Image (tube, rainbow, N blue to C red; front, side, top):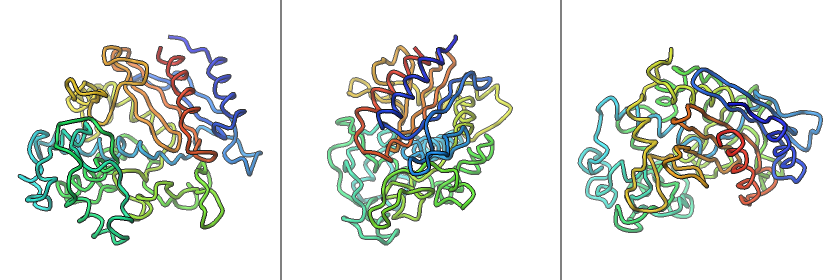
Length: 347
């Protein structure tokens, strides 16, 4: 398949012109590598002479849920550590006897667990990480498990805690040893970032306390509250690392690399797991807007302006990284660009 670079670049240049985002980095590829890529705009409007580059570091926001949590849960599942349909209370002492104990890992991954819809950690549980963990794991459910599909950040936070219980390792160590290092994702890590990586990081939201845009520090308040590492957000990454991750997903058995998760986990995750409930979900992945499960285009977005798509049937992937949060929290203008970009690169 050929790619109309002129139309892709025109689309993203329009996003810069209309201040949807300061700049963007994009790529499309297959299991063998990157087929096309490009950049547009600047790293920071306050420094207009510094362009976006392919090695720009981005606050991945909710892509953390895939890069760290989904991959780690998959590795532990393929190890045979637990069963996806087993009630959490039967193998996780922290939640036994509490409402969360009646939920399964599968339900958390499909957002059908019935847990509260917003994290609101500080307001509910204070600022001590252990008190936050206790509060989240012992909270009442919002509704009965399996009743509805309702997206909530809490699902990823809980699953991050679950990986730590099952592995005996902090989430950032588990993700690094089982996924990021094996795949050569050398620039992917949780923040706060060291100075050398922060220097090439795309700034995001304006911090009201300092009157500066966050750079190298997670925009997500929950991640910052928990020291930079949590299942919700907090991981930073670059284009090449996401390309390596998605290449592996298309052909894990043929890859020279070996992450902790493999083809069985990928296949299960990129298949509708919510039955007749809507909106349809796989395991943390969902069909791209404007497509159906039969079209086999799956997506995950980050609130800062990041996004990645994978189409196993066609053997292709795509990445679009922006720092749209620099300007606004409004999602509508970026949603239009994302959908058009996906149509241009994946059909």
